[in-house]
Length: 263
Image (tube, rainbow, N blue to C red):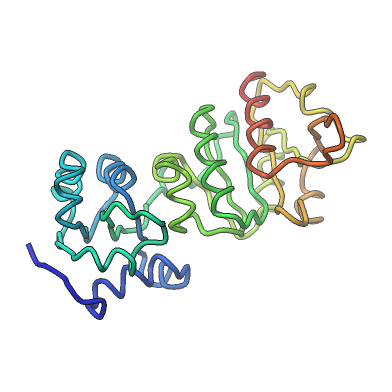
C-alpha cells in the first residue's frame, strides 16, 4: 500500500479538484466522496472506486467499513492526517476519501416510467436541498428524481447530504425539463408545478392513481415560465400563520408524501 505525505501529490490534487469543480468532474467522468458511511455505501452499491485514501486512524476506528472500501477500490493509499484538510470540506473529517467513476444509470433512468411518481427539480441550486430531497424521495419510494439544471448531483456536499440516496435512486438529468414534461404529459402522466399561490389547487386534494411528476422550483425565483407552461396543472401547499413559502426540501417532502399517500 503506497503512502502519500505531500499535498503536491498528483492523486491528492486530482481528488481536491474533483471535490470542488463540476467541470473537472464532467471532464474526467469521475467524482469524489468523503466519509466512512458514504464511501462504504458506494462500495456496497457497486460504484466503481478507482482510488481510496485512508488515514491509519481511520483504518482502526472504522475497521469494518474501511475493509469493505479497501477491497472494492482499484488502488488504496495510506495518507497522513495533515492531508485531510486538503481533501475535506468538513470540520471533523473521518479520514476516508474516494475517487469514483460516474454512475452509468442509462438502463434504469433513460426512460420515465409513465406509471411512476417523480419529483422534478427546476434549477435547484443548494447541494443541501438536492441531497435532502433525494434522501426523502428514496424513503418515500419514489420512482426517481428528475434534475433540470441547477446543482450537480455529484457535488460532494449533495452526496453527503443524500446519505447515499443519490447513489441508489434513479436520477434523470435533462437539459430540457419543459420538453421532458410535455412528453410525459402526452404519455398520460400528470405534470404539476408547485407554487406558493393560494389560487392554485391544494396539493392535499391531489389524487392520482397513475403517473405523476411534481416540480419544485429554484430557491429564489421558483419555477421558470417555460417549465410552468409545460405543466398540466399548478398545485400549492396551503400555508397557515404568516409563512409565505417553505424551503425547497421541506416543500418537496410534503409533495412527495401526498403523491405516495394517494398512489
